[in-house]
Amino acid sequence: MKQIIRLKNISSEEMLDGYNLTVYEKQIVYVQSLSYRSLHRISEFFACTAKADSGTFVIDGREYEQLEAQLLVKNGICPILFGQELADHFSAAELLIMGSRPKGMFHLRRRASAIQEAAEYLKSYGFDGDPFTLCRNLSIQQRKKLSLIRAGFLHMRLAVAELTSLTDEGYHQQEIISLISRLRDEEGMSFLILSSRFSPMIHAADRLQFMQYGMAVKEWDTLSERVMEIMRVNGINHDAAFTAQSEKTFTGLYDPEWTDDRNIWQYLHQVKKENPEMWRKCLDISLPAEWESTDSSTVIIPRTSYALLPENLSIEENLCIAMGRRLTSYGVIQKHIETKLGNDFRAEYGIDQSVKEVSGLSRLQKKILSIERFVLSRPQTIILEDPYRSVHIEENDRLRSYLRKLADQGIRIIYFSRSPVFMREDCHTIFGTTDCKNFHLL
Picture 1: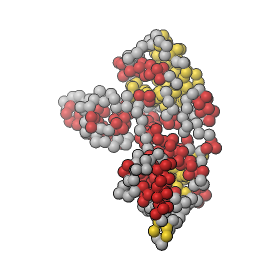
Picture 2: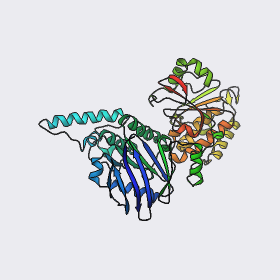
Picture 3: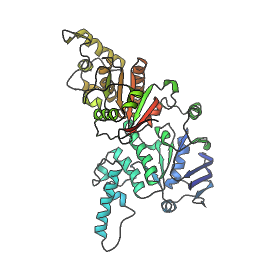
Picture 4: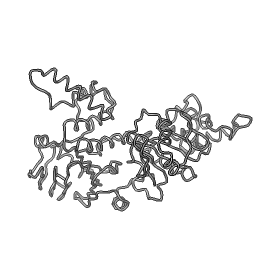
């Protein structure tokens, strides 16, 4: 592997003390530390806003005492600020071609062609905004994507990203992780990810480094149970990250070709049709008809289930909507049972008793309600499409606890997604397919 950059015995004030790090081509390197200041100082080197007191930076075999902007640009190295560096008065497509504008007699025609090429490049990497709208009109998530895609378009060799400066949205994390992985695989880019708290990005990394007191302590190339234990002992805690194997009670099913605009019901029926023997051997479950969330034993919960709740109905009415004849008297659910279910749900999830309508619930509470209304019909299996993308990152553990409670009750939880990245935190077994075909054990 060809080396891009090496930080050799770097010291800087009290933040770094003889720090060493090497980044090679086509690698995602994840650096975890308890100290935000140490990581931020590394980030400042690449932003050219801080200098090292001692040590050298080695780029393509040549040593430099400091990093300078011109040197970094020349060698294809750039910081990623997740949208903070984007000029608001340019369109997304225009920003991609800035710094590489065409010149010559047919400049205007060439520039128009380059902008169109940039727009197509954006779309090819899943940019869901308008490539021709001004950046100030883009969402936070679209700006994050644009920062990364722009680095790929400009053929950057190494992008440096500090996750501690990023405000995460849990249901968008996987998009960023998948995008970084694609840019590595398809554009040959390398990424240096700096984080003072646990991030799921660690699962996508090719190398992991743990640093403490401004020094590199240990490096690994896999995230084994032993590595997680070492990090946990050293104070880097994240419940989802350090799940014991015995607590991983879900089954995972993923397909890298999956897109959010596809029909989850049609997709699962197609997987079953294309892989009948593996389906029977590995999953052995029935499936509801299209757009039917449940049959006698299996429930399908789409990613946006929280938005599918009838908001004109009360919490009690939503809870009882899928219960069929189980709690009915002459076809009518008994009122005292309906009231008890509603009161129990409010008490369990911290909802004030005065809140009657679904519109008064948080997204997490809506998500749990969208699942709980089917749990009451006692299914054997629940298939969830990207459950953690439905809620904010700080709510992931609460949703995970709820799903584990269902697993403890004997309900089989199948976690479906486009990527196995998050599944490793919850799933004891993970199966993969590619556009419904080639059903296999990961």
